[in-house]
Structure formats: C-alpha cells, structure tokens
Length: 142
Image (cartoon, rainbow, N blue to C red; front, side, top):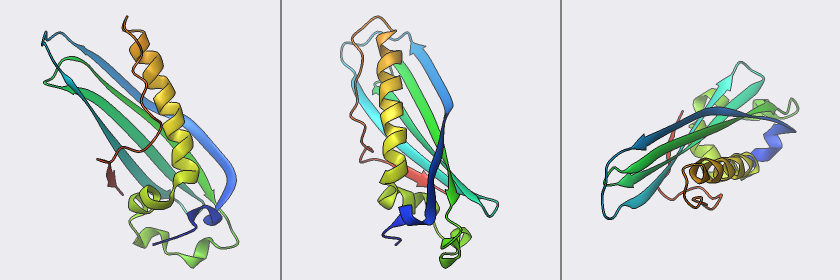
C-alpha cells in the first residue's frame, strides 16, 4: 500500500468532464429506492502521467424515474524526483487511489455531486443532493 500517494505527483492537476448519461424512465411505481454506485478507473499513460476517472451512477429500484451517470477525470503528472520508486504498471492503481487518492478524488466527487444536483433539478423536482463522498459500494478496475 502506498501511504502518501500525493507525493508522487506534481501539484498541477487537470480536471475534465468525461461523460454524462441521463435517461428518463417512464415507469410509474409507488415507491422506488435510490441507489448509488461509484466506479474508479486509473491507468498510467506513457511514463509521465496517470489518468483517473471517477463515475457515479444513480438509479432507482425498481427501475423508475431516471438513471443518471456522471464521470469526471483528472490527469496527474508524475513527480520526476521520486516516480521511479514504484513500478506503476505492476500495481492495482485504481485500488490504490480508492484507498489513498483523496487529494484527487475529493475534487472529482465535489464536481460530480454538484452536477447531479443541477441535472436532477432540471427534471422539475427538488434536486437530489448527494454528499461528495465515495459510496461504500464502490467498484474499481485498472
């Protein structure tokens, strides 16, 4: 486990909106329970940077109202002084970021939560405001 992940990257971070998918579901049900799943992917790009993408998907059980998925990404450039201390291609990078990547993931989650509130408010109802924290049922992959 990499305890101080932030020290391996430069302070400069490039954030971007990766993907949005919003689908209205015309299915009238009396009660629907919202569910939230977060997914993180991380990959080394070349020898200079890592790309991390965080996706939050909001759906209802049984399927009703809408389904919404928002992804934001960040590009992190390696700190040249110590990047070679770790074999970046030999570790489960998404899991490492899940455990110790708050320095980058928190900014992504803040942006995702804000956008979900804005989009759900446009549906004609009160906005769904989700806390900008990683959900307990998070999925990750390399």
